[in-house]
Image (cartoon, rainbow, N blue to C red; front, side):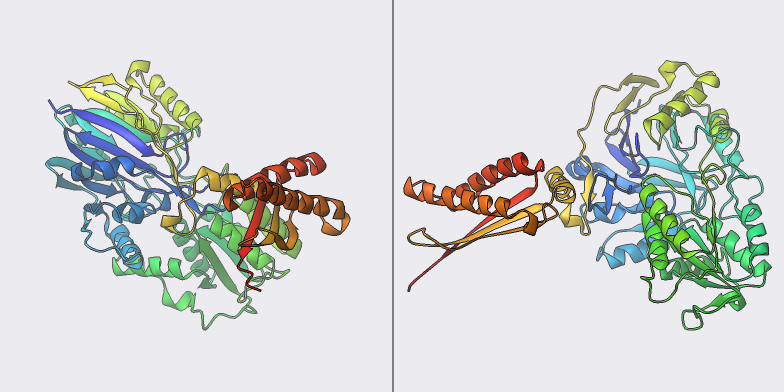
Length: 554
């Protein structure tokens, strides 16, 4: 009987950075490769992606990766993986087109992208993988069922149950789910981020009924926000603009490119008569909807820049109706708060949709129970969400009659090994370290760098510069002391003088004792100055001594 191992490289006890690994004998099948936004103490970090070390080490065994849809939390880390391992990618038509452009931009070639139907069967490294349609905010979304002699390993992906969705690219096929369940499911991986919400997510994921009265009451311009990849919600906004005979301007070229891709695939056709192009748009226009979109915290930063008059094309007006239709998600709280603060300074009418009122398109408790009912798995693994979400999801399974020994809550890197349809062990663990991306992927950020940034942000920096004769080691210039974020120099002359004295005395003493060495001496100066500054100021700034040795031929 097949050996099965299941673990996550990201997505457990966190929001985002989703990546799941299923091993059937020697074949490794990957599902998702996403990012997450950094915590507030990860200064300067743009985003965080999974640790690919295990996959690189076992690259000959990795047979393919399935990307269920095009949101950043499941796709944005994929280029970083494909630069190191060239493996086949299986995904839907829209996601494949977006991914093709993404890889081209990153200069990645020789990667086979398979455009698959939402209901399909794929042979991946000798393993049969089925996909099944699920409803989400992004078209072409699907779940994954990996076949083994122990039963299917099913990953539902991100989904909701909404019987009012009639568009084929969004619909869920419950018959397909039931058929897989009847064939036997060893293990079900169900997302957890909204497990604490009661009932079904639908229809609370829709915003039309909430913002239509605002559209109706708006006498002048409407400015509205939406996450770029929430295409289901964006179409709601477009339809409302059309209903109220308003022109719409898309203040995001990437969103417009997404809508073009949807039109090419026949998923949605934007009415040309309501769109304003960049050349046609004027900030003085009144009867218009300006749709501002971006991803994650960048959306809130963009709106904040507009409120602070730092955008060259658009400014808020006191008669604007401003609708924040992009509820705060994890990791964006600070940016959202700063944005709202700046908007209030500008006046205008502000309406913010809150996450307690508008649900994101993730399964609530009854949606999750339906998956358990349809698939009837032997084992249940909650995934995607903070630890509290995983526990709430596990508790739902107990209410459905599952014993605790049939429910497995894992940490990232912890391996669930199955033999003969029985969970044999969760003892093995792969050591993982988050990969923090700071602008460029080859500039990943270590803990030391983050600590330095924390010091700079809280205690400032002091630079102590001195020039010495390269031959005699006598001081010929300086010391020159500069600080940023530590003290006001004019009020602390005595500190500057004493730091200069420490620098001079240390160099002269080490030259006299014949132990002077540039790097070691700078380290000694740093330690002494740091202790002195801690005593005098209560701060521990970053201290950077600089000793320049000059060939003084004169």
